[in-house]
Length: 319
Image 1 (cartoon, rainbow, N blue to C red):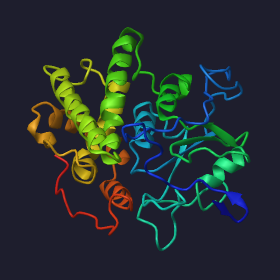
Image 2 (image 1 turned 180 degrees about the horizontal axis):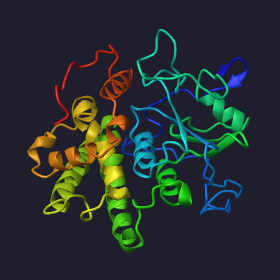
Image 3 (image 1 turned 60 degrees about the vertical axis):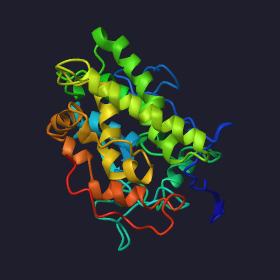
Image 4 (image 1 turned 180 degrees about the vertical axis):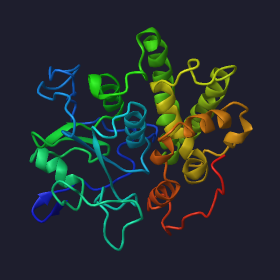
């Protein structure tokens, strides 16, 4: 659509479907990397050197992909290096909207850089011809006034190893000795679990829904088994695999179980999962990345799934 002469991508929860009516997620459009010396990363262009107060992160607390980046920022001690703005969680055709007015949910903020009303304006600022999906997170470069990256999996990698001595290097979310195992878990859980809940919630056929639900609960069985005798998925230290898993788990009872119809079991029926979630939630700073009200208000504002917009009062406790 055009708004004030500018192109805006309508919000459609089902970004695409396959031949069976299954949910297909669109790929991110900006793939540059911040590196210690400003050299090019695995994709994109060079020129994004790690510097304090140069980069700004735009997130929505409803969004698990955005919350991944917030968790990595906390774990790597980058709170004073990378500034953050939280957008309004409730979804309309013009996602994502900045907060700060009387209609905003508590905790959502105005745009501190350009006083824009919507995230799409940042995309057009970075690339006036842009016509892709408008998503969060967005990692913005204040120096060159453009989007560095809007792919959460890559942002958490660059937060882990792209900021050199500006970060807390006592935490390594992608240690060399575990990289193969981390990649295996990431690959296994992304389609079946992280994206599997969305495949269930936005399925347009019974077959696609049932396949997705089967994948979700197969994944929960795997996570529960993987945690047997361990603090985290790969041992005694938290890794990127835990970050990516936690953001989906924390939203499971709040949104996915009811709204997305992934309701074969509750998480408390898995012996190892609830203690694991508590363990991660209690790491200093992680609680600030989880906002129950934003999660519920955001998901239950999806008109295609909840046309009356009624937000459930529960659950009473995350645990």
